[in-house]
Amino acid sequence: MRGSIHKYAKVGLIHFMAYPSTGSGEGPILETLRKIALDEYFDAVEITWIKDPATRRAAKKILETAHMEVAYGGQPRLLTQKLNINDLNEEGRRKALATLIEGIDEACEMGASGFAFLSGKYEESRKEEAYQALLKSTREICAYAKSKGNIMVAHEVFDYDIEKSSLIGPAALARRYAQDICKEFDNFGLMVDLSHLPLIRETAREAILPVKDYLVHAHLGNCVVKDKGNPAYGDQHPRFGFPGGENDVDEVVEYLQVLLDIGFLNEKKRPFLSFEVKPVGDEDPDLVVANAKRVLNRAWARL
Image (cartoon, rainbow, N blue to C red; front, top):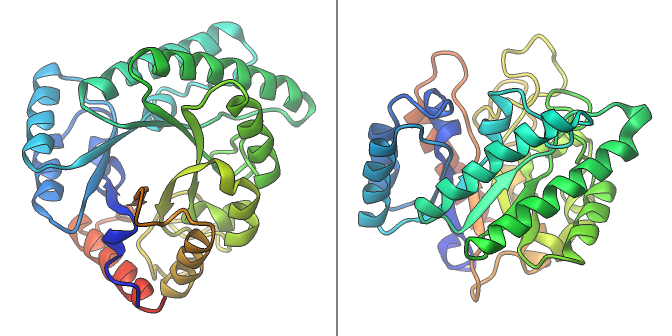
C-alpha cells in the first residue's frame, strides 16, 4: 500500500462521457458539473465545448470555486460534426482545424491546462498521406496553443479498425508521431486510455512502454470487443464489470502498475488520471461514477 492514489495523480472524471447529454455543448452542463465539483474524490474534471457564453462563465465559476484542475477534450467537436483532422480534402482538414482552434480558445477561457484531440479515419492505401496531413494539422495546433500560453496538447490514442478507426492507432505509429512532433514542440504528448487497449489488441505494457517518454495524460475505462451484438460494443466506455466487458479491477491493477513502473504516476508532478465511463441504456450516471471510484480504490489497494 503506497498511500492515497491522490498523492500520485490528479484523479479526474470526463464530464461529457459520464453525462453524455452534455457532449453536444448543450444540455444540463451546470447541474452535472456541480455534482462533480461537490465530490472531493475528484481533483480534476475534463470538459468539452460549452456553446452558450453565459453557461461557460457559470461553469468556470463552479470550477474555480471548487478549486478543481481542468482539462479540455476537443474530441466531441470533431466527432459530433464528423470532421477529420487528417482529412486529405484540404477544405475538410481546415474545417476540423478551425473547430479545434476555437476549442483551444475556449480551453484557455475556462482555465484548462491541457487540450486533447484525436486523429480521424483514413484509407489504408493512402495512410502515409493521411499521416502527413495529421502532422501538418498537429504542428498548427501546437503552435497556436503555444501562442495562447503554452497549454499542453495531448493526442488520444484510439482504435484503428473497430469504431473510431483513427489513424493513431497502434503504439508503434503513436511513437513515430510523437517523435516527429516533439522534435519541434515541447507542448505535445500522448494520452493513453485503458478502455482502448483491447480495441487496439495491445496489453498495457505493449501500449505504454513504447510511448512512455511522450505520455502526458491517462484515462481509465472499459470496453466490449468480443460481442458485436452487445449494446456497449466498440468504443462506448461502459462501467467496469459490464457484462461482456474487458476491464475490471484486475486490468486496472495491471494498468496502474505499468504507469507506476515508468514513473508516470508520481508524487512530484501528479498527472491527470481520469475516468472515461459512460452509462449504457437507462443506467444511472451517478451509479456508474460510483462504480469507477470503487474500482480504482480496490485496484490501488492491491499495489
